Each structure stands twice: as C-alpha cells, then as structure tokens.
Image 1 (cartoon, one colour):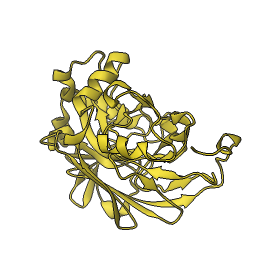
Image 2 (image 1 turned 90 degrees about the vertical axis):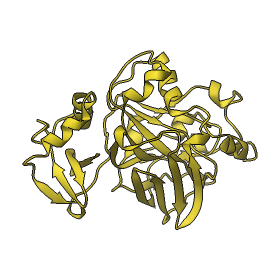
Image 3 (image 1 turned 90 degrees about the horizontal axis):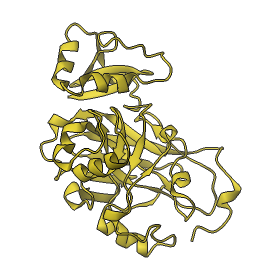
Length: 296
C-alpha cells in the first residue's frame, strides 16, 4: 500500500491515479496542532497495516493530479541519520576539500539527529541559503519509517518494527562545522512522495536507489552495499533511545554526492517506492558569520 499525506495534513490511500481520503474514517483532524495525524495513524495501524484498506470503503476519491502531496510524516518524534554508510562514499570524501568528518569506521561511528524542521515534502522546493563560497550537496537516501516502537530491539526482530519506506534527500552545506547545523536548514530533508508499506518491499537487502540533477546521473546504489544495514540501524538506534511510531531513519548516502544550484531539478528514486522530483531555489534567510571561514 501507498499511504500519503496531502492538502495540509489529510491522510490518503493511493489507488492507481486516485487517492482514497481516509481522514474522517481514521478520526483525524488535519487542522490539529501539532500536526501528528500521520504519527497517530501509523501507531494505530503498525500491528495490522492490512486494516488500512478497510478504511477506504466508502471513502471519497480524489484524482492524484488534483491534490498537493505533503511530507508523509511532518512531526516525528525524531529524525535519525546514519553517516558515511557506503564505502565508496567514504573514499570520495577522503579526497574532497572538506574531508571525512569522523575517523571511526562507519560501523562504529553511530548516528546523528537532524532537526525535524528540516523536513519538507514532494511539492516543496529545496531552498538554498545565501552562503557564498560554500557548496551545498545532495545525498540520495532511503527513509525508513518506524511502525511499532521499542527499545533494545534485537536485529532478528528489527524488520517487524518498520511501517514502510519513502524517498529521502539529505541536503548538506559542505564544511567542518557541526554536522547537525550544516544539515538542518529548512527544506534540507525532503521526504516522499508517500510511504510504501513494508510488505511491498520483498528484499530490504536489494533496494536500488538513484539520483539525477537536470537529467544527469549522479548517484546509483543498492542497499546490498550498506555498511550498517537496515536491521543494524534499528538495532543500534534503539540501543540508545526508544523508537516511536513515525520516527524516520535516513539510511546514509552512496557515492556521487555533488553540488546543487538555484534552478536545478533534482530527482531521487527508490525502486518499489517512487520518486521525489524537486526544484532548487535560492532563499534570502540563513547567512551567519559561522560560514565566513573556508570550508576546508
């Protein structure tokens, strides 16, 4: 199943080129603050996602081309990210001006958190801050959406805690400042276009990803090449903190990262999930003296 968030917080089930609006059937108020409707929806259906289809009976249908798709999970408890999780990416960073941030092997350096406010959706542009003399790069990743929460989840049970998957682009200002700051600008974590439930992905060790900029291939990889694979990400993160329904884990990027500029079109695809097709624009806010020094 494909579950979407649309038109300012409504929840829908994708059916071909239409969408069944489940909002009222699920008892959700799209105007509620904070906007945790999808988190509640995931929590209520994590144990039995097949029950979602029953909500669609009698639900109003809308054409997909008549709705605005939003970030699937707008208000997760946390947004977890795994750095340097493909060996080829580590090697390319060694020769970059900014270099590799951590000296630990990827399997031993853990994870970090991005600001939840960096999340944006498939209808939103990537907004570049005015930081002259700095490159801003794309990173093609998979969003792993937690369904059933838990703490100290063993590897053998990890996949049972996944609600679904989505496309994710981790945008970053290159440099050696604190990673969280460089990756947490508004719009620096597009996710979408929807969540594909976990039962739709037959083999999590063979998910193909790719990213293009203006039609030029930049990144292409498979989860078979992950250093910390998907079950290990859940095992590691839950060893430290309780995972909650709707939490997002970003898988880490393969090689081929590169700069994006105002006017670019970035398309990131995850096989079996879909694609994010985004414009890149230049914003006015975001300059700070911290960016005045060289990136190297």
